[in-house]
Amino acid sequence: MRRYLRLAVILMKYKMTSTMIYSISFWTAFFVDFLLFAFQILAFASIYRFIDTINGWTLNQMFIFIGTFSIVDSICMGTWFFGILSMPEKIRTGTLDIMIVKPLDTQFYLTFNSFNPGSLFGVITGSLMVSYGMINGGFTISPQRIAGYILLVIMMNLIFYSLFLLVRTTAFIFIKIDALTQAEDSLTEFAFRIPGTAFKGISKFIFMLFIPYGLIATVPTEFITNLLDLKEWAAVTGIVVFFFAASRLFFKFGLSRYTSAGG
Image (tube, rainbow, N blue to C red):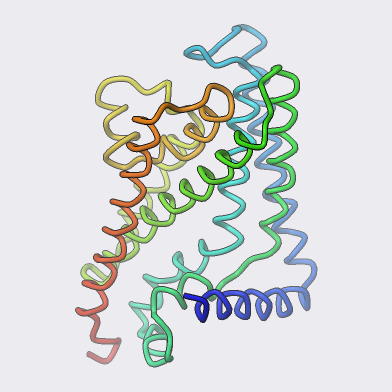
């Protein structure tokens, strides 16, 4: 475990050095992420001009939700996102061969091979938005709440990672998965822009359990504003463990079917 942590740090340092050579690309990533963040704030601020709550959530809770989404998204984009995103192309072209022959776990190498430090600035803006929502909304701030919130953000990153990996692993079987990834993009965009508490009936089952994108920004927000009871903690933990284990097993299965571009 210690060896892989050290290797992850080395890979990130190497990518950081190579990225800073092209500083324009580095700052462009930050600028684009900031614009998306700002647009979402403006959208919800406009909505709350005409209503007081959305399914019981105040504007300050929505600020925390937006900030949490920004934090989770920035960590994902800055660490593993682009590595896993490139997986179908590597499978199709056979360049995955280069990773398989290295004395490292292939999934680990894919995960940390495309570190993107420019995206991590979103963690700062997201944290500021969460802090603003907490202070302006009069919510209790304590070390326990902050620690629990950080833990849940890590867990939500694991869910997002697992779901993202599950979809891309199907490339081992189908090779071309453009239609599947486009459908996933639409579902993700929808679920990430609406608090999970707004889902009802079949949509709640789909986005909170079956493909639980609806949990990702909602659960940390609910915890830091209202706390979660023991059953809710157990349910969230169970979902995280299930999807992470499923993605790991499915990746190993897919890798066992891989025959490289040349067959």
